[in-house]
Image 1 (cartoon, protein in one colour):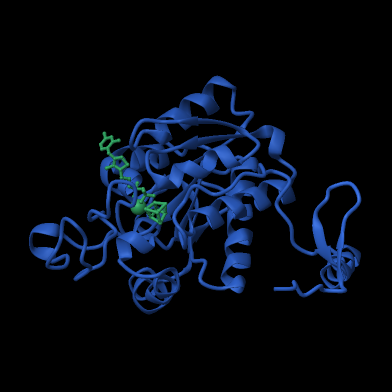
Image 2 (cartoon, rainbow, N blue to C red):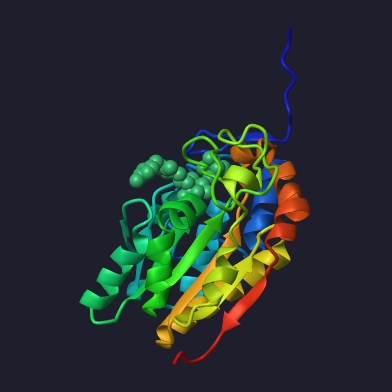
Length: 281
Ligand SMILES: Cc1ncc(C[n+]2csc(CCOP(=O)(O)OP(=O)(O)O)c2C)c(N)n1
Ligand code: SF4
Ligand SMILES: [Mg+2]
């Protein structure tokens, strides 16, 4: 059978790559266009290792954008907890260290104090890491008024280890450890970490954001920048909780997961700023 020849198809002289002139025109046209959105300078060009639909990657992207916009890259040290939330730390072009489960606030405190308060030190922690095993560590770091920032990834469960219940799991939510759905008798109620920490004197800024729309992403970026600025200004602890989709824990597709955050998580975890002061006593 005779092969049909496409007149538009040419072989590139050096690469030997076959490229349709129609496609090439489109590529050339794209090069001419103004680039309005690209990878933050602060991020390595690496493929994601997170599941499809995981929003932890977006959280790292917004941390990267915040660092770029505040021009603080050379001054930042990140401390990761234990869990999927920590996996993005290697994507950032900054100095970083991983702490034992729940112990990121202590490691961050040690770094900040031993370098005489100079670096901008932040932790990225999950709800299992921070609100379960590390809650005491977190509360005491805020109580000391450490000049640190924490980005708290709330995905309503333990993503890494297979979707067990976390303190942030919603009532009636089915997890591998609450197959009948979380019931308050025996399992307690969802903990509202941003509101809880906002009641503490050492806290300078506490807020909650979500990433279910571009507008929310922009709001979250603004909020993370404000949190870093509080630390730069030496006010006190700053804290941003971000609701994050974990499709395997939610047992949903990526799109259904976003919708579930909108229909269920936002009701339990309202967005907003719960504390914002310029001075702590
Ligand atoms: C002291 C200790 N207990 C338990 C574990 C096992 N472990 C590793 S990751 C993880 C869950 C992490 O969940 P979360 O912090 O919510 O992060 P996510 O994966 O959901 O982002 C657990 C229980 C551990 N590494 N160390
Ligand atoms: S298990 Fe959940 S938190 Fe972990 S990478 Fe997958 S989607 Fe993200
Ligand atoms: Mg989690």
